[in-house]
Image (cartoon, rainbow, N blue to C red):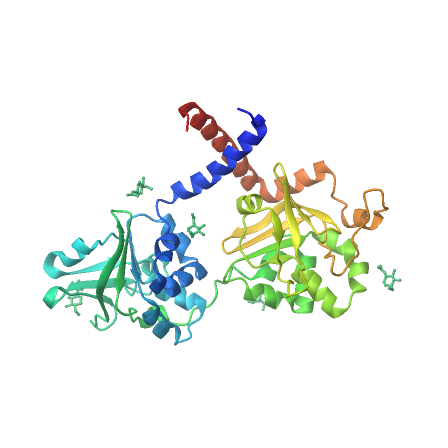
Length: 391
Ligand SMILES: *[C@@H]1O[C@H](CO)[C@@H](O)[C@H](O)[C@H]1NC(C)=O
Ligand SMILES: *[C@@H]1O[C@H](CO)[C@@H](O)[C@H](O)[C@H]1NC(C)=O
Ligand SMILES: *[C@@H]1O[C@H](CO)[C@@H](O)[C@H](O)[C@H]1NC(C)=O
Ligand SMILES: *[C@@H]1O[C@H](CO)[C@@H](O)[C@H](O)[C@H]1NC(C)=O
Ligand SMILES: *[C@@H]1O[C@H](CO)[C@@H](O)[C@H](O)[C@H]1NC(C)=O
């Protein structure tokens, strides 16, 4: 083979990452629905509510899909995303119903449990769906606690992969007072509260003081990645920070967030330019994600920070520790070449030496670090296996 072994190995590694993510989920509801523009709205909200990944993780599942017209009648009621998640999860049956099985229900009627029931958010049996064979070959669907009304009927089968996933179009949304009840955002996802308890209190306090926390919180639903400089780093940075105007302070803080959920694996496979919460038209406020073996670095051209640990990883939110404040080039002058005096940066980064970083990583993230290493071992052995099999 002509390429150097390390390059070949990293290529195989990358291939295997994508290989393992596609095979560990036997199906991908987003991809299935992407072929049908009439279901684009439903598909969009499966992603926005993070139901898509939950559907992909499950086996033996039936998705009752609504076309864009039916979805717009649902959306016209202006439910919050959390409520919409409950409503849509009532449309995901945790059993397999292909069109044949639907038309041949024993005794003509049955109840199926749904993902709404499975979340534990559904009171009583409100997370069950009644499926009934009706006259003329029709199949009716209704929420179990809906006074016996079957609001929706079977339209057509969209995709059947027996017995993993069946996607069935139904005519109308399933009405359910319980699923439509106002839902509070999950309380554990209070960003400033999470950060305050995990060694990011100084940064969280700055977010609160500038109202930047509102912008961060608004992005929580759809996915959010936060890079939090540790308390000591923020403290050392304060003299410079205090010198900034209010709007620059806010931009600097927003610069520490990305409006998508990116776990370590995703970050490592998506190196390159990254927009931030501070990005606004001509004001790029972007930085470059880089990696050196297992270390992920964020390069703003003014400063390069390292990710030293994970404070919280609970999709749709992930919070990382970093060892420097990210200084955007839009606010701070880029440093000259390596020979230029860089004492300020050193002051920002007392934990720049390798042992200190490892310490932080182990303290904050021993378990995940271990998982990472196990994954690498697994992937490497798979690599070797594939090489042996001649794949
Ligand atoms: C169904 O899922 C299983 C387990 O993930 C997988 O092995 C199988 O290939 C899937 N079946 C089809 C038809 O995709
Ligand atoms: C599912 O498919 C969508 C669209 O093709 C893609 O963006 C997403 O990464 C896939 N998800 C998984 C888990 O493979
Ligand atoms: C489903 O609803 C129909 C119509 O209200 C009712 O007759 C039937 O008993 C229900 N099925 C079950 C299993 O509860
Ligand atoms: C998060 O928690 C803090 C402290 O408990 C509280 O002051 C703040 O209002 C909460 N924010 C949200 C969005 O719930
Ligand atoms: C704050 O700004 C002033 C005026 O631009 C400057 O002289 C001073 O060095 C700055 N202080 C810090 C800590 O950057």
